[in-house]
Length: 233
Image 1 (cartoon, rainbow, N blue to C red):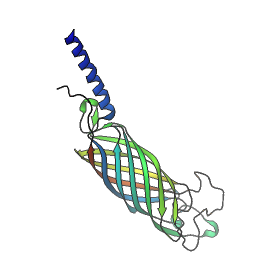
Image 2 (image 1 turned 90 degrees about the vertical axis):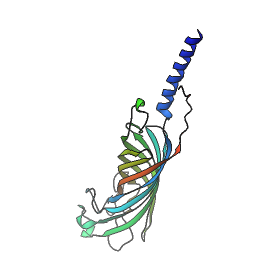
Image 3 (image 1 turned 180 degrees about the vertical axis):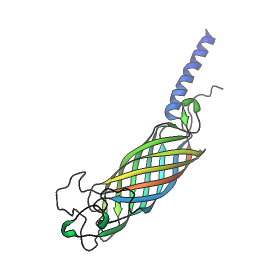
Image 4 (image 1 turned 30 degrees about the vertical axis):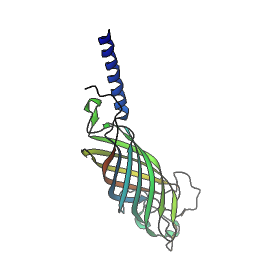
């Protein structure tokens, strides 16, 4: 009876450990690193052409890996955006045109969902060294210029991450930022104002500006996660 009870207890403990591992097992809890890529703007001065007037952008990244599937990321982004109404696809009052260029700084946070269990270990849990993911969150954006821009943004995006080495992650990410204003492209230059140039009532979608980021990233894992399961060896 003792032997049966012991085997039964060990089996139960093993199952519990595997279940806990699927939720909590992760070699390291945190990542820190950065990214480099491009930024472009879409709004009154660029109606519908992605990747037009691209500028350099960079970011600092901190990520907390809650599990194989879920992660929370904080980032600080610095980049540039520019536009010219002459080739924007829009017609403005009195056939006026203008151009703008500004540097922006973003502080934000996002929740990431990995489509695969992301890790280079624990193969018995179906983990993979790479995973596509999607993200959503909230952030603050400040833009330089004679007319400073400051406002909320809603980031949405997709990406892919790859565990290159035990503690090194490579990634590629494309994301958009929905701004709650129409003056991101209004830097205070003379001539046509791009802050509601048509003087019509705006909505969440209409007459609002966006900017988009394309980033290549590299991060380093740290903060070893402790394992609470009993070692059965």
